[in-house]
Image (cartoon, rainbow, N blue to C red; front, top):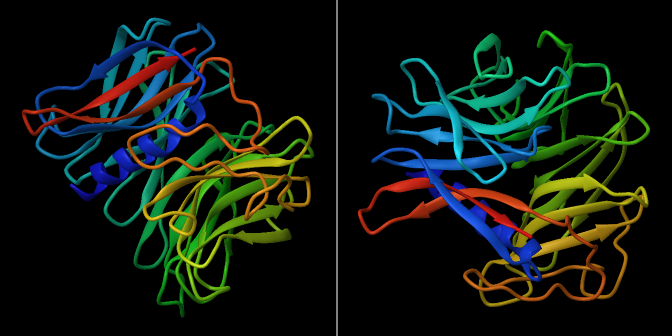
Length: 326
């Protein structure tokens, strides 16, 4: 249940980008049990690929992949998994028109590489010491992959922000851990225009409270700079993307600027310094369950966002939901 609750929370956070959009369509996917979406991307045929988790088609939670057309109608679905609980955390269409999926299991995470119809080409596990969790994967310019997540390392007794770089076959080229000696986690990573990387997550190691954590590192994983963002209470970074002015936009959550959890949108320059007015530069907030217009300083948004999340129905089951806005 905990994993599906997190899925719903991420879905609510993503809605901040839709304050001026009109809903075009809505679809649900899955069966009669608990199903949830974690990641969605538009594909080259103008359809969509959605990854998440399903309890509906086996005895355990499995990775769930749904391919749709441009209207959200299902073209095919695939389940991946063995005898242990597994969930799909991230998906991206690759340069060969297949897909790369990041799956998360009880104590480790793994990559699934598929062809254009979702058939498995290879899988690779990644795990160190006692525990590891993967959150996001992206294909890199060299045809390999960059993965971000968290792990326990030797001599450490709390989560460490963790990055894995692989080649095109999923073989590990290097790994790096970032942060300090406290509870730090990686949630999102992207290759930057110069061939390096930007990653976002949360950190406890550098203050009295949990903060948004932004890390800029080069092509070999060596740190160029780090930034933390937040107010007097808790913040956490969910997603980061480099934008056309070479700065960054971070989607996060906060408890510092209102009486409940809110969406926290941070726009920075190329050095990670927030720009625009507001307590942390340009940021937008939204109380859970309704929209607020982003405050001055927020950047423009995609013309037609596509979301994946979980919907709770009166039958007490949950189904994957995807919405198209434009």
